[in-house]
Length: 106
Image: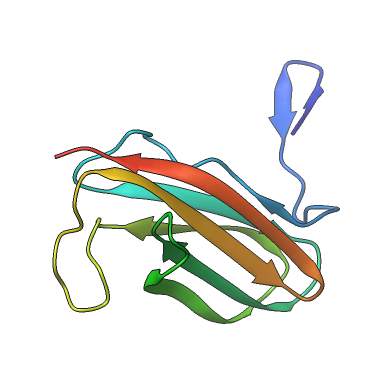
């Protein structure tokens, strides 16, 4: 994001890979995760419990370069609402990898 005079210009394409902090956090019933890709990339984003077990895979596909977001409804891969607590979400795209924490509150 850059300011030009009093107008704001948004770049069409980010210059780096990035995984944003989810919002809201803590969340209930859903949260948004934003991510940036400087190049077209096969991208995977999954949610894990604190023991490292995958709860659900939110993204596993190729995205064009740009700014993206995915919304998670707090359910596991079987459609069950997860217990309250802290979880990790991880993004892998090309050689980029990043992990962040999120909190689900019932």
